[in-house]
Image (cartoon, rainbow, N blue to C red):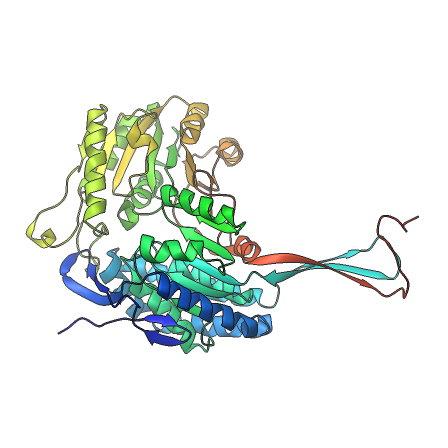
Length: 496
């Protein structure tokens, strides 16, 4: 049976790309399985989508925010009804196991419900005027047309972080999903249209970064950019956006550490490290790629981690018994292989994994063994550079202060964690770890949608997704003064 052909959504119509070219979306667990055929769009398609979004903005911005929120709430209800269907689609196209893709859809549901509530808030401020018979307030206004470039590892959750707050704030959107996982974003947008979203308010254009992503960033009528992806690409996007003073939210890489102190509950820490390192096959910006263990428990913890990592079941995520799915594509496997070689060349001890899997059940997919390096130097490349694969580096530390120093000694600052029973050290860690997120006695993954998500240093440029951070990005402040004195009053002049 021929694979289904998916078209771009522009101005409420499903249309082919202007280029006439398409590409296949393949299952990374079994590349014989073609998920669908998607449009290979270019600048002309982006121009059409932005024009449609700009036209739709003139009406959408005037829809009362509570009414916009009702549509988003209905979308959340529909997502919940379709959760299993969408989760299975996502496992086929992205690879992660079903329990994780169900969580990905649930995150979009949670975001919909949270942002629907914001439709009756979108809080501004009223403040006393310095002059008599004068009223002063600040209100949130929509930004306009927002361009969005989404990653492949959370192909519904992260687009929901971008689209839903932008919509409740009165913006219109052009989104380009990752070329590896466009179907999940399609499912989200289809849900929004089924919930009653007007034509042109969200436009989806598929394709590759240079052809379809770059024109979104460069377009003069795109008023803000939201990007999630690598630090290298994010830096380029930030530079381009800065030339036109365009607001730009960059959510980029991480090199996250879990600290395990001598007094930790080692059973709990072990489960947290396994989940943090090998959940989503290590393909999360919040993945735990370093575990910093105090020397008193280092060898004991290493032996237990190696034993468990070697016994994780790797395979097709549609099998409910599988614990670790494939990597997203051949390039990611090659990157993981490269870093395994780098780690060995640097003198780290490879105690588990280290190679691509080639058993019969893995023959048609991009599978890699869960990999554990021990005795890793905190300054080495495998401890400093983002791998985005199922690889964790164990780094010994002397004490709490040394652990914090190692944890902070990278260019990234997204997520962090510490396992300890000492409340004083836990609070010092909250204060002293330089990261956007810190977990106490929990792994580095598992953000909740009502809190701000993002990091410091090379992880991001200061903006946040989730919670009020998203509302802040997708609105701009407007100060309003109402003078009902019926005479000229000059601020800072007529105040005496």
